[in-house]
Length: 244
Image 1 (tube, rainbow, N blue to C red):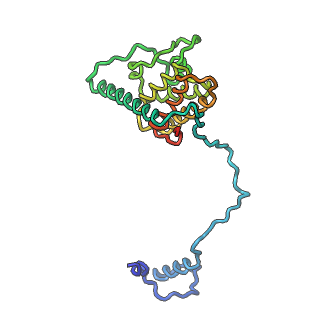
Image 2: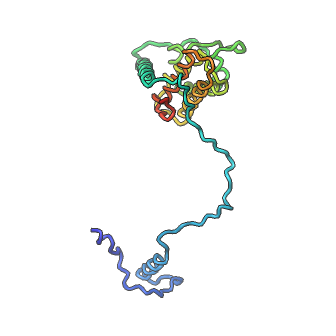
Image 3: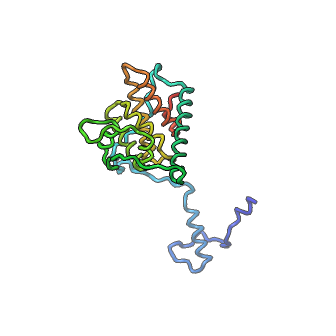
């Protein structure tokens, strides 16, 4: 079989090695002979010579994103604890998904809550609504079931990005903010788009940095940081960020 593959597809006859390749072929047979002669003169492997002096240096500095900062030995969660959190989180997501489905299929009666949400692009407004601030008209709003059901996916993704950016800037996760982060993660639909995947990875990294710098730990604060790292890594499958 391999011998058959080596046989020429077109018969060219005897080839004159002195055939003038600068002249146009006078027949199809002569054209094939010219092609064969040109192919014989080509090297089997050709390597381009690169003049590195002419290469432009990159104008943008790309900083590689590191993984999570390793947890101090006393703060590291056990694998059993992480698996338990993922299981509880999964059950909560299924519950929310079932309610959404019942509302869409008119099996459940539901009315949007009378909440004046900020504009989707209003980053400061959403942060103030989630955390509360005396300098704004928005009071801290707890992320109740009705509130979350009233948010569509683009809004959920935008608010998550706002809150993660805020956490990175402040270097702390307040109780109210932590509740919002958890509930938004519960309502976040899969599969993740690239921007949302990057956002969740930033959340896990920020939590790991905060955890590594904790001086006077309390059980709730460390558990919250461990929880968000665990969910991003093990539920949303960013396993390179997981606590081992």
